[in-house]
Length: 257
Ligand SMILES: [Zn+2]
Image 1 (cartoon, rainbow, N blue to C red):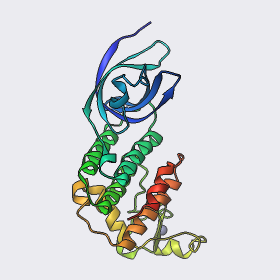
Image 2 (spheres, rainbow, N blue to C red; image 1 turned 90 degrees about the vertical axis):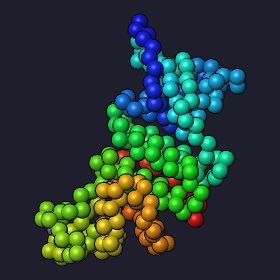
Image 3 (cartoon, helix red, strand yellow; image 1 turned 180 degrees about the horizontal axis):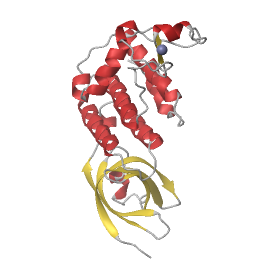
């Protein structure tokens, strides 16, 4: 049986749950590896160092091996970065945990996607320092746009979905998160009254968020209506995916500041 042990230098803990009487199963997102599920033996024992180190939102250095059966086991763990949002804000904690849940849901096991890891770490680092709850919400929205972009599920808004002609953003007739139509096609769109369309100003905003850094995107100030529309757009996009949203996502919407 091949039981070669090796260290992984940057493992973000997405989730953990009980596995039998003494162990815990931990879902990690590791740079250069992707998402994996690993067993932490004895981690339910209160004196085990795993208890606090392998907490969701923490980044760790882990020593692990893979058994012949293909299952991963963690044998040692050092905390590189501890994220303890609950000490500061409930909303911060829910946003952080919802991010972890989203990453778990939208990633395939052992599929390497380092940009996904990096944007998540960067968002967590910014979130940890935040005090203003409105900015936290904005950061979470930006995070979602970045995730959509990395996963390639943000539609291209430069061409008409129907006739594939390039569209002048100033002449947009109707659009939602799944399709954008030019004047000519919109005339013949039988569903034009059935779908929810958005103000074309938001196309510029989405474009900006895609092209710019999180830091620059946080400087945009949005009013209450824009905030609501942003959340509606993101929700539409999530609803078109094969995975469902975590329940905490609804909790966050109900806590909207
Ligand atoms: Zn068209």
